[in-house]
Length: 492
Ligand SMILES: [Zn+2]
Ligand SMILES: [Zn+2]
Image 1 (cartoon, protein in one colour):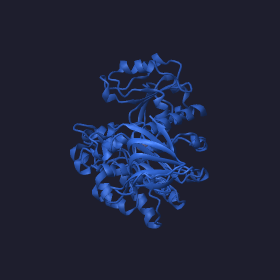
Image 2: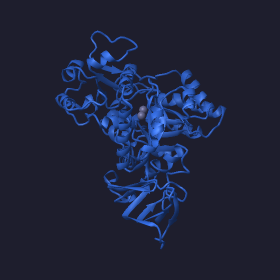
Image 3: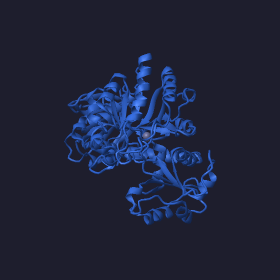
Image 4: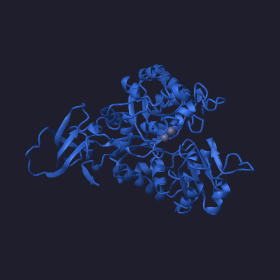
């Protein structure tokens, strides 16, 4: 047995609940908690050096495979012109014979455009290459890739490399599917290590994409014990039979009801402010969603769907409401992202027992003055984005996630962002912000009895910080001293 001491443990059972030592049994569970350091012999004593301890962070929405893969690839986040993009690409090593580049934002480069196919061919004439936009909703590929992918419709004769919507999905799917098992596992190991270093003990991860099979699912399921953190898996499919066959308790993920604000494809109830001729795109019909959700609900699968604009959220919420009225269950179907909402929609979410899986960092990135939200939606609608406090107040199960690779896999950044939402009325308190990355997150996956708080009978999963979150002036910069997963300490 191990006694962890010399720390202030914030248990998250209640806001002021603090203990000062705890005993972990040989089976990785918390056996006893103490408000004073106890005198016991015959146990291993682990000094936490005055750390401030919280339950291990849980990120409830990542694309860990892509995140891990891309962290082994070209990150274009800081490129300010296309020459820099080409320079970074030319130094990138292939993974399984393919070049991956991500985090490209045409608004951040001086030329304000994507590279074209001829420019990419010059650097990589013989190796397939994909360069994905920061939001993942469009990409550019080179000629080698264009030749290798088995397209549903042939490419136009003046194809310049740029792909969006279904063809974008098809291209990224081809790149992700044609990897060796070793490369896939390497990506997940990379993801798990990044998660651990940033204080996470559990990470929800999407597997496959809307256009793909879920080839990786069984491989990862069989390898779960190899990773230093726990992964919670989402088969990103709409085939209920397959989800049941693989024994998944949930289905979906970033299965798309709409696109993104960046690409003007998030579905809005009223037109875009900067492009009044469009209101975005609902990717699928009401009927299709209703049938899928009804079938999943009937089979006790928790459903997760990507919806960003208010029209997409309404569409999915309607379906959730219908199944919940027909057959009330405690499945906590998820609205992933849930970015633009009215009061009326939030009231309905609370009633329908729906959960909101949200990304506080989106507000940091896009809600500022002249930011993406204001450009696309105007001021009034921007104030209705990322409504964390309004959602929390209504008792809707709210959880935090990074949508990594879109934003960093870093819960402290998410907690920091949640307390600093641009619309002050929507800011969470630091305590509430921690809850959405710990306790609430555990409830979302039905693991409230196993982890999420520091208490007797739960797994010894916790993160030891150099500073107290509740009193910190810059939460995102707090140093992580160590992370304990299942009773094992990982020092940094
Ligand atoms: Zn996602
Ligand atoms: Zn998404």
